[in-house]
Amino acid sequence: MSRKSPLITVMAAAADKAARSLLRDFNEVENLQVSRKGTNDFVTAADLRAEQVLKDELSRARPGFGFLTEESKPVPAKDGQNRWIIDPLDGTLNFIHSVPQFCISIGVETDGELTAGIVFDPLRDELFWAERGEGAWVNQRRLRCSKRERLADCLIAHGRARSEEPGDQERLLAQMGYVMRHTRDLRRMGSAALDLCYVGAGRYDGFWEEGLKPWDIAAGIIIAQEAGVYITDTSGGPVSVKTGSVLAGNPNIHSQLHKALAGR
Ligand code: IPD
Ligand code: CA
Ligand code: CA
Image (spheres, helix red, strand yellow):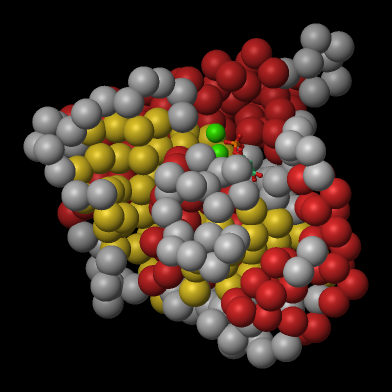
């Protein structure tokens, strides 16, 4: 059933309000684009504004929940149980450059386990949402991951831009090169939260990235899992928002992708 629970309804309403603020600012960025001064400071302010809207709305609706957000200090849960994990703007670099691919991401952790998440793409008006055991949805449509079986038929996403660790950059380039040669193609769209939702929607067949933060992936992980996606960390161990390492794939190709990447 695609009926949203009270919790998801609260999250969707908060995201909707924050999105209005982001969209106003995005229009402004498009105007600023041609200026010499650039848009970084302006976008930082847009990020903070959206986060404040989310915090105000969510703390009014669930006063006991704590917060782990990208832009401010963590707030412990008064109820000792629940916390929001929030990225008010995932896809900042796209936003800065007026590229229309970004979202708001809100996850819920209960006793340390991911229990619900929403990812809202305001430009496409796509709300991805899921609760543990209840399936995943985009707007009113059930999400299901793809069933492709051969890596050669798959579209695979990846996000990490740069690494300062010695040898790491070469390994990343080798991994990307392998994927480009042995799959249908590689995508790097710049929002890890949307990348995970797109694997859930069967648009991508897999996604991998390391060095992510909890707010990049908390909501996307539960949405993708509830859509049938198999997710581990990049070494094949259990996924956790703490390690920031994600390897997601439809259950038919996950191990093929793991093997391919681990060998580089
Ligand atoms: C980033 C995006 C990007 C990923 C980066 C993240 P931000 O988040 O999710 O896709 O490759 O690792 O930091 O900075 O746009 O919120
Ligand atoms: Ca992010
Ligand atoms: Ca962000």
